[in-house]
Image 1 (tube, rainbow, N blue to C red):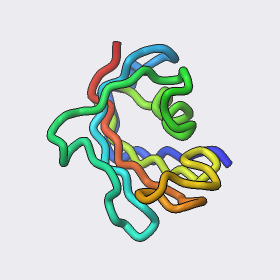
Image 2: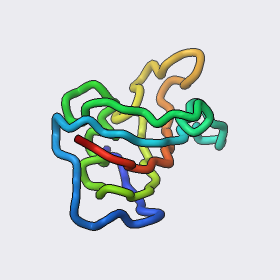
Image 3: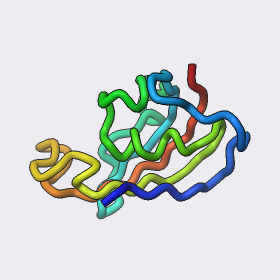
Image 4: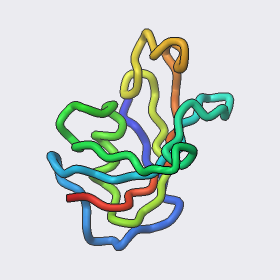
Length: 108
């Protein structure tokens, strides 16, 4: 099942990252019960990584290239596009559906 992307705040409507670009994002990752398992906001530093080259979960590789610079959105990721059958113990349970509130700050 593909991940879903729900816009909370539109971005510039023009500039979208391409595969291979390095994205800079803020995010909160939550489990189905709403508990936060990871947050760049809590660390006080945005997250940066290449997109679309297999370094991130499939849900991010699918959804982030649909976003435009400055956009804030919710990505809902079923286990098959997140951490799979086994999860990422002890933080993420097996077959977990995850929600990420993400903000695309920039990309290069």
